[in-house]
Amino acid sequence: MVKEFPNIVKVLGETEPTFDLLKEGVEVINAKYANGVTEKDLIYGAMKGMVEALGDPYTVFMEPPDAKIFKDNVGGAFEGIGAEIGVRDGVLTVISPLKDSPAERAGLKAGDKILKVDETETADLSLDAAVQIIRGPKGTTVVLTVAREGNEENLEISIVRDTIKIPNIKFEEKEDDIAYIQLYHFTEKATKDFRDTADEVLRSDAKRIILDLRNNPGGFLEVAVDIAGWFLDPGLTVVTEDRGGKGENEVYRTDGSAGLLEYPLVILVNQGSASASEILAGALRDHRGVILVGEKTFGKGSVQELTSLSDKSSIKITVAKWLTPNGVSIQEDGLMPDFEVKMTQEILDLDGDVQLEKAIEKVKEL
Image 1 (tube, rainbow, N blue to C red):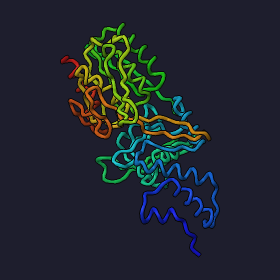
Image 2: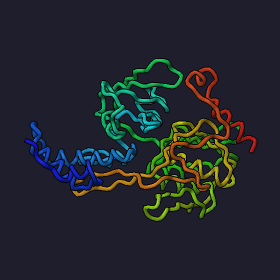
Image 3: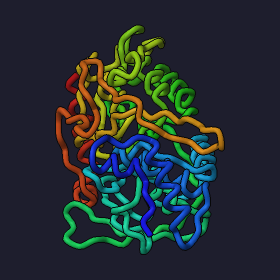
Image 4: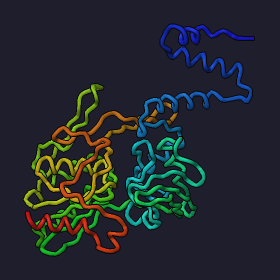
């Protein structure tokens, strides 16, 4: 016996589908599906399907347990491997392992393409689904199968998960009165940490600065704006959120002391520099002509907002793309350095940190 579903006939033959079609789909499943299914499964499945239809790896639906984990992780400490993961050209890709993390110690590199997590292939996983299975309790092991540029064969990297505490900043004085500041992540605490470091620079004999944003996967936009305020006059545009006609664009401007404005500055970047790192580097180059040294950045230039739903599930949804002060989109293309210097483990072992050496050379000329 064939049961008639009028709206399905209309869709196939004459009209565009409406949300009434979802109701009919539920009716078909409840009437026909042999194994049984709950209403919650159908609703959550439909939510995930709608989000996946957008084709945006950074827009995801999270059921209540996953939503809670995500919110807890924003606080700066969690259990896992300690690596920022994104999607490049449709492939799950390491943006950057965090400093002193299990991922870094195991040898995971920025740019590694993650093909499998243990025995699970990542090709059909959403970004957040992949992140959830990579994370896990402290002391457990996960094996990532990765493709790495320059390697003919895939690598299997075994990583023991641990509690991840996200570091923020490192400061040291280098030769010829150069202040070297390495910023690892734009966490909530990074604003204070950078202020303390800036005070150290001002008290020191430093006459020029190298800001190292390599392998910095980003973090809070507001923190990047605050830090930009140390290097730029007040009132200058740091970044514009282009909402694509869904509301007014939002412009973020400096509101700081400009305490480091007079210091000649060079910035180090690589393919692990993403999101807030790209915003900060782009703003300083657009306004001050600051030289970027290293490799092209990751190209994570979209803005996500987290919206909590009535049952404590959440949608993390892309609401805008970031534009540098000159109106350039960071998304996908990233930022090209003014002086491109390639770095591999082999180069590091043989010749040392050639990117830093180039940055020292260029800042001395300023």
